[in-house]
Length: 467
Image 1: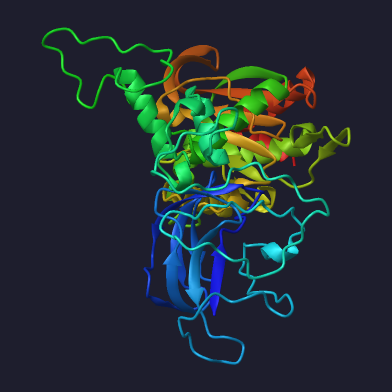
Image 2: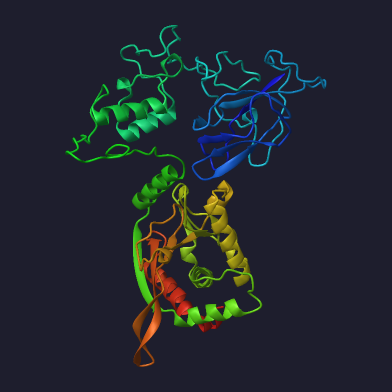
């Protein structure tokens, strides 16, 4: 019998994922939980294991395609309930009774049991699959069927013009892409099945209008003619689709900046004692093999300061009109990766010793750089740190991670003339920048927290007075 594997929700209500690569091909025999594909969500790169053991019959989507959750991506020929081997027969008709399929870790409930509204079936085939798909299981629908809005397919040339007054045929991701690029889909000719407008059609339209060879509305940037002797390899400008981590980060930053009233405070301190402590710890036997950095000490100082200033470890619940104060700390660490900025977090960081915190920070950074951070590690943070000092930056005004009350930015550690014991001496100095949600944190609370973090880094012995 034929089994379809639909793209699952890979966590946190993500609505789509991009297929990066297939690990199997048509005709390959796969086992249960064997990795069959690598996909990229807006948060991480995830490996998809097979929910069936059988033979790959068809790959419905190609690498580079953005697929909506719930859409079939691969079909398998599997043995039926009677134990018969795959025979390559027709697709399975509707079964006698709904049956739950293997529920893989991280996939959530199967589509039939999620309770979500059924998606309206499209009346055109996916590229590469000329046969119309047949639903194999009953799907719950609303009592009143929605009126069909898509025209019936007409056998004609691959590129069709849409009837006047009808919305161009495209998928939600393509419509979003066109909106972001300022493209009117009514001016774009679709090359997909039955005239469907694809992402490539939108990009080709933009490239055509920017060089003056395409039909349709002109974009807001006119392409100037290069002067004699000038050469622009690859054109005078390049365009990169907004997707994945970049898309999620942009949406999150806009939401945070225009929802939470930000306030930022700065504190410059002499961290020479902390750097001397760091050097001693590195040479000690207890921390042999651990990677200790200024970030390690700053993270520990933040966790200690939160005990005296819990308002910075809270959340504004707009829906219930409540302030939620967390009694645990999931410490987010902003990480620059080849895929863009991510903020994975260390769960229950407040319960970790300095050595375990250093170990967790190292593992977090390595996983983020490899693009293997799981969606679970990217959600549930309560407060964050961003280490801009690694880029040689002294201070900044960091934007809050959505849902959190505060974020601390660490500046570069620099040797500077500084007043020390009544004289001017060359000391190691750092600037701390604290942004907080002024709905949750008053100026006094933010100042006391920042002062506590600074006091610990300026004199680690101050910890004895705070615990």
